[in-house]
Amino acid sequence: MATATVAQGSSFTITGSGYAPGQRISIALGIAQSDAFVFQDQSALADAVGNYSFTVTLDPDLEPRTYAVVTSTPDGLEPGPAVSETRRWATIEVVAA
Image (cartoon, rainbow, N blue to C red):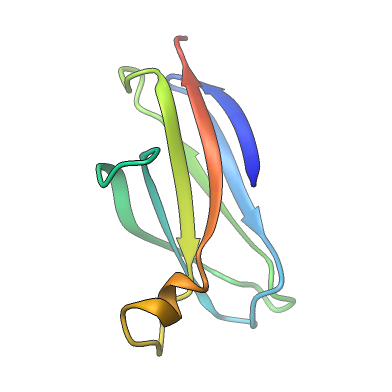
C-alpha cells in the first residue's frame, strides 16, 4: 500500500497504470478505517496507454489525521464483491501546515 505525508492546504497527485484506455477510475478520500468521506464520486479517465493522474487539493482547515484514498473501476459491474475486487488503497497522513 502506498503512503504519503501531506500538509493541510497543499496538493498531491494520485497516479495509476494498467487500466484499459478510456476506463473510468472512481476516486474517494475518506478518514482511514471509517465510513466518513471528505469527498467521493470523483473520477479520472485512463489515457491511451492505461495511465491516469488526479490532483487533490486539501482544504487548509482539514483536520490533521490519517486518511485513505480509495480507487475502483465500477463501470459495468454489479455493486458488491466485483467492485470490491477492483479497489486500490493508499494512506495519506495529513499534518498541520
